[in-house]
Image (cartoon, rainbow, N blue to C red; front, side, top):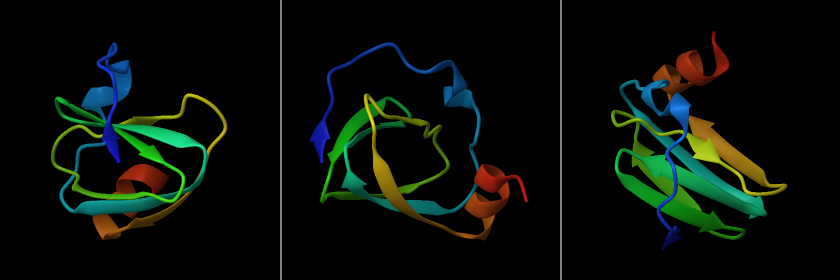
Length: 81
């Protein structure tokens, strides 16, 4: 996981804030993960785990495949259950 270059923050950054933690691993491609003011670039073979209290939208600069584990709060927020 490396720090990505600073870019315009996604407009959706204020959404999807909830208690708990999210965890994901990138199977292929790259994910740019925004965590409040931090910007992380997570490459294939790397993983990220983080508190979901700060805004935490993710973007992909191209095709990407991830495996994500959500706690109960994350499941309700991200999947709309």
